[in-house]
Length: 281
Ligand SMILES: O=C(O)CCC(=O)C(=O)O
Ligand SMILES: [Fe+2]
Image (cartoon, rainbow, N blue to C red; front, side):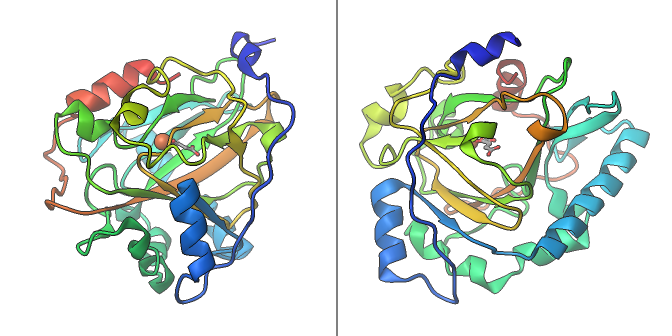
């Protein structure tokens, strides 16, 4: 048994309502999000689009491997091994700058309907800021180094730099079927609006992988979209399976506001990203 699995104590998972996103959010959807700090929309893109996105990610992955690419706009790329021993990219950044299908996804008008959940008038997609469109590929192999993530909030970067915590959302487009029994995203509902003490100390950042009795595990299918508040505590649980069954691919794009801080070819890795590179397993 891999040693990390001892943290998987949760056997029953709370259910939560799933919604469908039209051209505007409904009052019920807004209320659910503000209370819980997350929301799940079914079938945001079709299964056919998901298949094309995966193919396109594989084409880009092959290019990056061939050119031995280490950074995109200063953000380190994570490599790992697939079940067959082949080198794969386990975390792509700024993928939207490499494939048309990804840029088209970011242009989907319904994404704009979600800006309202962020509150700020100058909310925008972080297409060329932060890490752009991120693509995570988790798979358990005997030597996989990227199969889980410890408890954290996504706004820690602001805190790390001593900046004011700005409103931020993370949109996740799920590319594989994933149920709580197969690991995946775990959220602690309602921890996004409990003040600075909860934000800083609800868990020990990046070192704690333990299940929480109040955590919610997502049940998603390819094409589903989730939104979580940047201040919401969450983790990625390791799949108890090894091999194909453990595969989980998900893309993230943040909705951000405030000062425009684009990253370019000449950007250097941030201290924070170096820190992440050593704490992420
Ligand atoms: O892979 C996921 O679903 C979440 C990843 C995550 O929380 C992060 O990269 O900050
Ligand atoms: Fe996160």
